[in-house]
Length: 485
Image: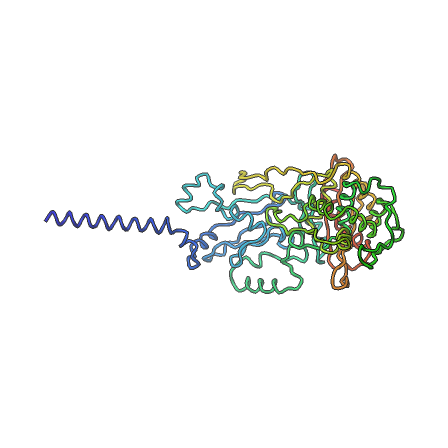
């Protein structure tokens, strides 16, 4: 009898071992298979069982969490949602995450191992740490000034601190309230359909995801390339530029909105934005020189992240001389985001050095302890310091007595460049008004802010005064907010 009992015990032991091995196989080896199965709602339920961490501007949260009491318990909420939507993006139970909500999801949702003092224990127990916070570099007053300035018109504003690369403002208009998409019910679905069908594209982040022909603001890049290459050595010497200028290899004649551009100096050509002078300069520099100059500023860079991705600004190098002439005045295939053009202004302001822009100062645990900082942001020299000094002089002239006088700020030195970019079939569309600028308070040792503004379909004349009339006052107000003027 004892022998049968021993056999039964051995058999039961084998069955128990097999059961434990199978349980280990399911829970360890095949865990990812079950976790990622669309039918498994437990990860989703767990994700929304605790409040999400916050995104902070100026030390104050611009996000929150609402307890719905439902299975997916906490929904995302936003304070001044349309104002900060280009930065926060949305966190939706139905449609996922975008922008900072996506790039910093690990910290905000509590799934980042760095948030836990015992990450291995939490990994075994599947315990989720409380959501951490993301501290942004934004200047609240600058963000508000940019949003007020656009006043619902289609366009965007980007502002950078030249000496560090910190993004101070990132605004797009028209905007939307991300809270409309937070839930998973009929209201969220209706808002999603309405926003996607809106021809004004309120969910498009025009500051970093939309590229525009930069028009005459690109003449900053062309002037830098010409000065660095030695094509121009004296700002006040004649440039041997005809008016009109016949595009090489064609019968097309390029003209100017201003008079007196024939054979004028680079100083006057920059101040009054003579197309003929800069088109010829681009041809004289050549495709290779213009491409190198543009790429030094960040054009054709497909890897820029702040930390979410930025649409690449482009300068086409597969062009003939006529196309190069147009590219050099910010037309043809030249395209730029407002953030890219703010980078151009920042490089001029910082003695020819450019720092990669960034939006996150640091991430913290719920209690405020720092988890990770922004890291180092080394500068790269994009032009000679002497060239940058000459460009600063030219940009100051534009604001002092040229097309950008409406950007002037008492108690500060301001440099700028207006631009009007033609678009549409046969250039029949109303122009895009551009203004790029930088400002330095009289009592400061270095420039405090660089700004780029674009207003789509600006209701103004096609001349350079469009950028000065529509975009320059917005840039001025943003710069004043940063400088405390």
